[in-house]
Length: 148
Image (cartoon, rainbow, N blue to C red):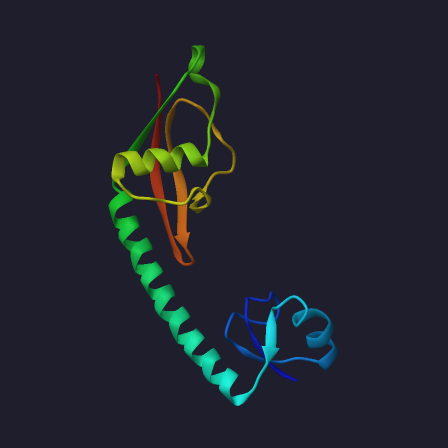
């Protein structure tokens, strides 16, 4: 059975793609969850327009991410936090605090989920944090944690 995906389905395809699936898979999983609809001539035309719109949105989003990378890569973002002896912080600095600091200092709105932290920052000093705002666009943001 030919279906048009209404959302991304892992292992099957992306939104707007026309896929061939088993009748039972469509009837029992895809249709009840609203993930796909039967492919007719009109719906396949709509799927094509959905794909074109998605490509345009993706290109715009990628361009914005590359512009963001060009602005943030040379900057050093300063975050102040309370610290004790030896440079250990009382608490930690997480991705949301970093995103707020980037917005305040660089004027760039960045989603906290784009900042890849293995663990929250717990010491004073300079650290490079990976920022991945879009698939295929990754850059380093230099963060300096200073004592209040």
